[in-house]
Structure formats: structure tokens, C-alpha cells
Image: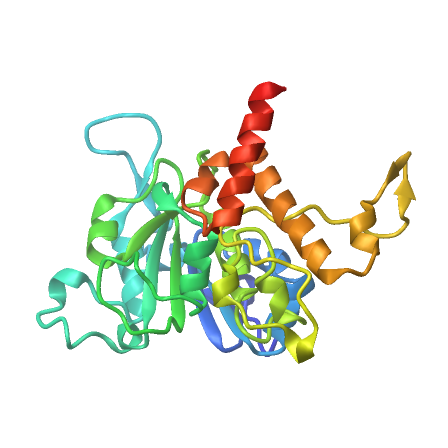
Length: 317
């Protein structure tokens, strides 16, 4: 299978599956072949073929040197399951040019890869939540505020470590990782699905990946109005920036379906009226489905007034 400029799979005798491009994602996993099909379709596939992104999945078992290529062992202290051993992971990261923090005698003299604004991320159920804000930081669209060590202003390479079994030996996290990330309050069988989520959510924000770059702004959890360019060619925008809210509901042809008609306001051509309606719907949907987002969303005085009225209405009903 070939996607982008080159692809070398473990089954071909190599230790990694590579898709060539600009911003780079390295994934350390015991299942490198998992990602070949995941990234073979849609926007992600086009980004890879157009050379905007490189994805390489590294087979962790290639760094285990016993006969059985063992990468896990029983946990100290007892308990269920197995834990990924530190030695193969450390060797894999060293092979990628990442030095252990304890061996960095001078923090200004980092290895070559870390000088290029690399982030080393452990995917773990114990990690902080992966959000659109983190995706924007990784894509270089906002100033990073969540990393444990100082970095340059632009991320050029992301190394994702896929946990398995009961997790990863904590010393790998302490010695090599910038942060732990979780994609939700649930447990997966491994970090591969989480890695695919991080790569997809981040790469679609990289300039040039989406056919219309505004698509990455006017969507759930997107930027606030103040961060979005002004109206294009004098035409008023009919959208609001989400500013941390959920997106408004969408409708398309036919105008009537299943006995329900699309809102008339969306078909009258009044951009200002459409924009007001969409903002109200954003607030209403967020209040209904994710009310906690309102606490940190970028709300105007008018937004706050509408939310308060919605809350009063909800109490009356």
C-alpha cells in the first residue's frame, strides 16, 4: 500500500510504516499496521498525498531483543494485567533522537529533534483531556500553555506513545514525555485509536489541509469572533465563531423532510439575521448538551443575556 510519497511497513521487513510530508507525527506502537487503513481515506489521506504531513508508525517490538520480542512485564506491587517495559520504549525514543531529560545537563543544549519543537506525548487514561485547544496548539494556531518544558513557538514534530495493557512504566513518562493526553473519560484497549484521533484533529487545522480554511474556524470548539478575520470582500459573515461553544445545527436540501421544515431564517438571505439565529442556537445547544463549556466560553454581554433567559425558560418549563 502506498500513501503519499513513500510507505514502508513492518511486513516489508522494516520497523515502521511511513507516510511522507511536512509536519511530522511519529507513533510508537505494537501495532504499526493499524494506521495504514486509518489514514488511507478522506481529508487525512489528501494531506498525506499532498505532502503537508508525515506520519510514521514505529513497531515497539523491534526494540525488544529477546527471542519473544517481549515488551511487557508484571507490575511491581501486584495487580491485574501487564505493564509496558521501559527499556524498549526508551530505545525507540532514543532512536527517534529524543534524549532522556535526566541526561540533559544543560537545558539549552537539547538533542536535534527537541530543538525543532518536538512534543513527546504519552496517550493514557490518566492524562489531561485532549481538546480542540490542545489540537490548535499542536497545529501552531495558538500559544502553547500546557507543556511541562519550554519550547519554541511552533510545533514541527509530535511523538505519540501508545499505551497498552495496564499502561506504561511511569519512568518513561518522567524521563521522556512532555505530557500525558487522554481523549475521554473511558478506557480503550490501547492508545492506537487515541493516536489516530490526535493526528486527525491536529492535521486538519494545518493550513492547506482543508479545502476551505474557514471550515476549521466556524465549527464546534472553534476560535472566538475576535480571533477570526473580518468579513471577506465586504460580504457580512453569516456565522459566529464558536469561542469554545458547540456548533449550531445545520440544514440542507430539501427544505422539507419527514414533516419538518428547515428554519425559514436560513433561507431568507439576510446574513445578519442568520448570524443572530445561529449564535442563539449555539448557546442553546451548548446549554442543553455541554453546559460546563459556558463557564470558559468567550461570551459577549448579549450572549450572557440570552443564556440567562434560556435558563429561566428551562426552569419555567
